[in-house]
Image (cartoon, one colour):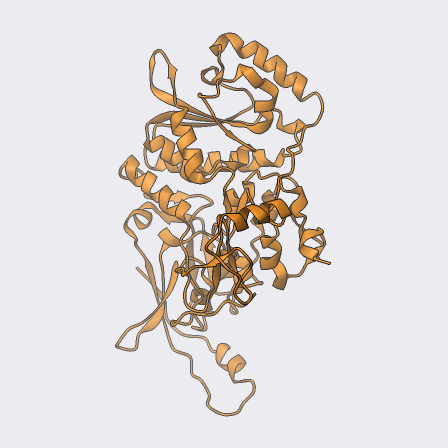
Length: 441
């Protein structure tokens, strides 16, 4: 029996396979990007913490996946630091386009526009009261992320309103926590860059999204109250494992043919994830065959900077020069290495998903790592897997580093390696510590 599709627990070494169980029409899984797949000692389980339906959970020390519960809300993708989970219901590009098309003037005396995003339960409650051209629809308010909000601000929006109805009477109520988290982070970023855009998470639909404007506000409130008189829940969606979806995928890949362990209907594609990685490309999905992940020539696992982060930085750059020297938020971090503990193993660079921690070996023999805060996604991998507990992850990041690619340089001392047959040589050399300060600007 396939444990991935029955909701039974899976151990850490099966987490990648477990995540693939939710790969479908709403979520695209890139398991090679998952910090916990790359190293089971990483503590990140943000997808399980944010899941609104119990599809992904962590109970009694085990990851549990019940794909039949997935409602396609996209909150897991919103909180995933490495974009190992990507929302495709709608895609980021489609949602941004819908938001930009739905812009409406905030008022007769207000020159700027308002963008309204409405969750599916509010859509169901209000029906024809809503103006379909004046809002963008999502399954859950937790689908909205900071890159979208900051792009809307850069495009001239004066207010972004995310409507999530009576969340205390919705089975997906947990999604509001993610929406509030995103709104708080977006406010920090917009304030730091001088963006004049209000970000609101509300239970009422603004007049700009109602067919009758403010005249329909009372009726909208009445319908919401009546609709949520009983608890509501979003309907589960079909997944890639469903037979009809598999048939649709195969039909869309006429040029593909089975080959070895390649899934039927999946065409092999060269990708930029590094040598030794095997991927198969279908109409909407990418999968890695097997559980192993081979290292690249420099001894590290393949790196990937999420497109969302690139789009977010582009949006902030469009807002102008930062007005603050530092930001403290959930998206970026700065590492500090304790020189008295560090053993120069550079495992932090091996497992860093984005390459924010990079090795250097200069011609004069100087070696160490560099940290690029702009590429850091604050997944905590470096801190969690450091064998010497030498790494701290700070919340504050200099805005100049985000915009200009600034970096911290940590010079290390090569460890002595015994060439004897001592079976404990690795442990012995890792116990050695180095002297001096390795934190350089």
